[in-house]
Length: 118
Image 1 (spheres, helix red, strand yellow):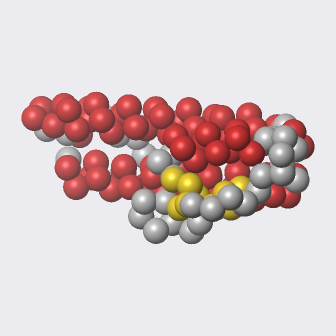
Image 2 (spheres, helix red, strand yellow; image 1 turned 135 degrees about the vertical axis):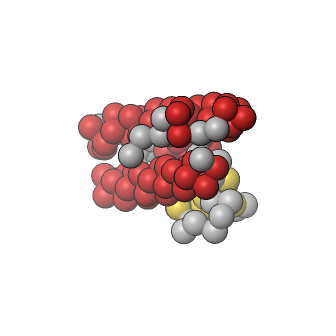
């Protein structure tokens, strides 16, 4: 379901702009996840860490492995770091699936916010 400007009151232009910019950002993240999935055998930890940063998932303290916690109590995501080595394919697939789930949740949140505001 797509959010249209006519669904919101004229006074909600700022809310609409924020929602749409966030939607575009989530779409960019989804496209980046798709690109990474095509080369799952060569993903480095810092690449998925960058995606988690963009989703506002913050790293919990500690050295190894990096554990990322969401602001709303999402399931932690663990990103192993072994020097400059790439992630194991299964690990990379699992992390990317978790990131896709987070994107889906954020999109659902935006949709429900838009429905309550509009």
